[in-house]
Length: 309
Image 1 (spheres, helix red, strand yellow):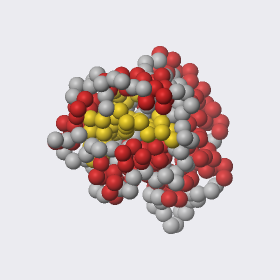
Image 2 (tube, helix red, strand yellow; image 1 turned 30 degrees about the vertical axis):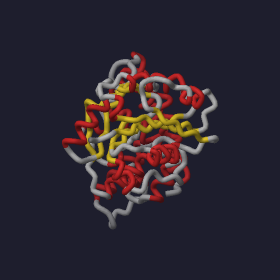
Image 3 (tube, rainbow, N blue to C red; image 1 turned 90 degrees about the horizontal axis):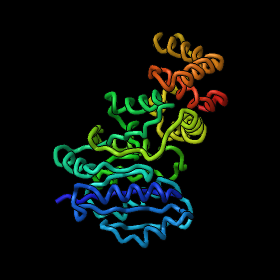
Image 4 (cartoon, helix red, strand yellow; image 1 turned 180 degrees about the vertical axis):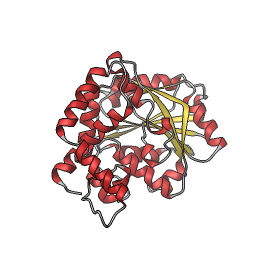
């Protein structure tokens, strides 16, 4: 009989962690069929004390880091402690639907694969279009590859995680970079990435456009160069290859034209216009291509200014 280990990294988010634990207490799956492993990554907000004093119905194991070590180390420590043959990774700022674990368990019984769950964001009328975009991109529109492996809400076999070599602890603790690199290693093993729409978690706080763009810029400066150097195929995954010099006689003409279009589109004057339009219409509707453009612009800003890749 399969047993689930829910692995949750956390750092100074006790209020939302409590909500997640409460949602796991309400799972339709019997509590003797799963364990919860919380890895406290150096919190100083009372997280460890609350976990050590927990007396609810869940089987919770708490691993404590005396200092912050980053998400890769934190998830790996949770994996090493896990007793289940099925792993569910959850971020600490989500709440689990009552059928989340049952849904994952049934899916693993039906088909071998790496399962990517559904994240539903808190409604915000001022960010209506952005939330629609986030809820309909990637796996939601049919994409099924390692770039969709964001460990906010995913499940896989423990054996597959071990065979893939766990998360790369040399990658800095920024914006799911270790997730995508780990997903790439799973793809090398031949694992299929399967979107499980009914495996639902609810994001516990609102998201705004400014933060999304700032995160994209930080990702592009602090992590993307490392990922590209480590795994060259990421150049194409993140379309960094479109920033390379044009070679008319050494590459397909279609690629040269794409590079020309990208160079024109990435002018700061065009970016300002697109951003203003997006902010103005964010409460209503903006085509996804606007958000794709804004994210690409910010994600590649540092690379373009330094020409380092």
